[in-house]
Structures are given as C-alpha cells and as structure tokens.
Length: 76
Image: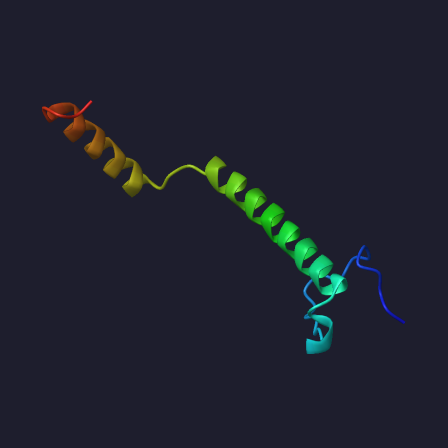
C-alpha cells in the first residue's frame, strides 16, 4: 500500500526511496514538496532571527563602524 504524495510524512523520519522510483513523477513530487517545506521552515527561522536583538558586542561594533564612516571623507 503506497502513500499518496499529498499525505503528510511523519516529522523526523527518514524516507528511503528505491533508486528505481527516482526517475518518475512520484519522486519529483516528493522532492518538490520537501523543497517547499524546507524553504518555508528557513523563511520562518530567518524571520524569527531578524526579530532578535543584536548582542552588546555586535552593537558596539556597529556603532564604531557608523562613527568611522561618518568621520571618513568618503563615508556617510
């Protein structure tokens, strides 16, 4: 009994696909779905990361860079 490509795979499980299946539409559908899920997860992680404050040492470095750019003849 085979699962349809629209069925959800259990999270965290390794899916082994026989080499013979890899040329067909089923394998392509599985790859496309996996890529979409990975992309969505990465976008969500990146959005969360952008909401985090910078650590104090990086904030200090950013301030130093801004000051040096303002002071340089070619800066800001």
